[in-house]
Length: 151
Length: 371
Image (tube, rainbow over all chains, first blue to last red; front, side, top):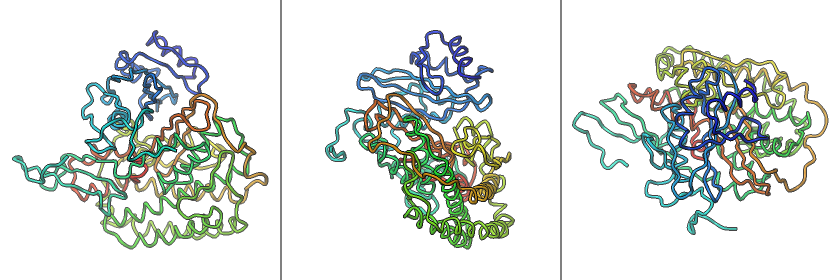
């Protein structure tokens, strides 16, 4: 499917989604509460079949956090990007590791570096930092006088 | 955390493999739950070489951050740099001159060959054959010499810049690469004679570590690991960049999904890389090796994603820019991260010796995973 058809089909599945303009791939912002059901639909829908999740990122925008999921379909060879805005003081979103197994490690990384909690994740603990590390290192307000050098 | 190494009531034992271990190819700590010698669960513990590269890049300029990625997957350092340079060029709409494109592809394919040679030697050593290690490094020396003459370094060649390459090719480059091609053509058949047909090697590799196509897609596996399970995922074919669209080469695919299939896919990839280098080495166009760019680069506000095919799989660079001279957020999608997540699934029910064989064919480079 090309970008226009993709937008039309995704808009049918989730009318409340907001599409961003000017990006290379179809980019949409959804409500975090709608993510699990939407994820199931884009995985199963015969026209979309987004079966390959290739990048899970979190971006700290100082007022809120945004989770960004990059998906592609190995059948139809189209790519789409799904974003969800989270509350910075209590960032929570449902896990998709039962739909795409690769999300298990990627979500652990997002938890470790940003503090995003993933509901129903099978094994949510820190990945890179030691188990007793305090704080969320990749956030913009992270202070660490021992390990960080401010230029 | 493991409190004690003891045998539990149902006979299960927990042991550590790594982080200091010759077979883990880096500092990978695996916590293995064993029943006798059969593996029940493998749990990777990461972070021993986590250098917070993504956070560091937030305070480096767009010209500087490229070279930190050489230290991530140090065996495909050119290709990592290439991916970063492509992302910056995409953001700033820089047009790369044709000579630079061909030089970049030549360097990429030489790096891929060097990486696969090291993989072959190290993997054969893991399963017990010591001789291939020396053979692989002997050929790899030829590539390192070529790199040293042109780029100035043997492992982390900081050669790519946004807009092209840092310096022009050394006058000896063409002659040396041609000599290398004719040398390696005969050597790769020697590699096959030495290892591929060996009955001990085959029985260690065949039927071990099966990964089905659906699992490869679900775990996000990429590169030769996924190609051996029947998934077409070569970025050079799916989203051709530089001059890959005009070259004749194949994407080796296997369907068995076991260790021997991954091994065969990489051997065929080496031959394909050799063929790509042959097609290009006599046809390097004249002209500029670098596009004219400003000294200080500023990407416009927005998000940019570029994908390249390293020796391990798809490497993605995701830049979120707020219009300044440093990136706001960079994410490096490394191929080893997703390939490693499939290790537990592949290794259950096998013995420890099989685990070493599986890790060898996954071709993990831990700094790539930890960043």
